[in-house]
Image (tube, helix red, strand yellow):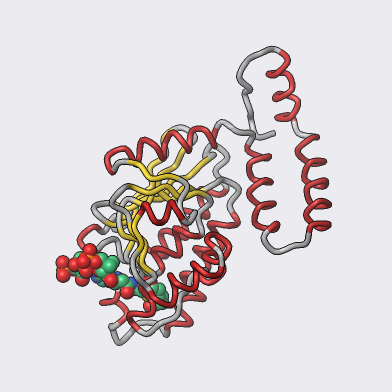
Length: 259
Ligand code: T3D
């Protein structure tokens, strides 16, 4: 636990809460460091099979803390991105466990980028996304230019990034930026139900699937087919595959161990 970030582990599900509601969970250096460390720690925790990322109060995350940016000792923007933001995005993609962004309110700037970098996004009715970078004379960062066109297509990505109007949760659902919208007070319940379903899967197969989906975005069909064959060779040799077959045969739920 660090000021501004909470990590709660309950069974196979870890919940990371950005917890600085008075500043809409804007990201300071200590919070960014703590977030990266939490992701890296959870990545090697074999008991954790799914992660929820959410925000305290009325925001998911308002991106970079703009007051901190104006401090004379603030690192140059490119350094801050290379040393603090980019490692968070890469950690989200490198960890085997899927990360569910439970977007409870506004997600702006790098806060939106972090949500885009998660594996699944569900939104509360009051959530909204704002590519706030242009308003302060910056370019989208923390992976926004990479994830957004892949999530919603080039035309919508261009409108979001170049016009910068906020989009509502319902609009985000319509364009495929989130996979579901739920009443505000049900967001964490829904996120947990989703996380439990993910956590019930065979951990190795889930991690291999996450990696394959990422690579599939950038490789040709032949490479994807060959990649799937290799991964299936690995998953097929696992104890969890044998357990899955046995469970099917015996008409019971599988008990996956990650072996
Ligand atoms: O190091 C680097 O800089 C590189 C990385 C850059 C990545 C980035 O994220 S750049 C983009 C940074 N974020 C923004 O530009 C968003 C700024 N915030 C807003 O545009 C609005 O606050 C929102 C659209 C997010 C929400 O608007 P609204 O009307 O619901 O709330 P509000 O009244 O503007 O904000 C409430 C409080 O949160 C307010 O504080 P106060 O007056 O009550 O004491 C406001 O100052 C504070 N707050 C909101 N966003 C930030 C913030 N404080 C610091 N930093 C923020 N980003």
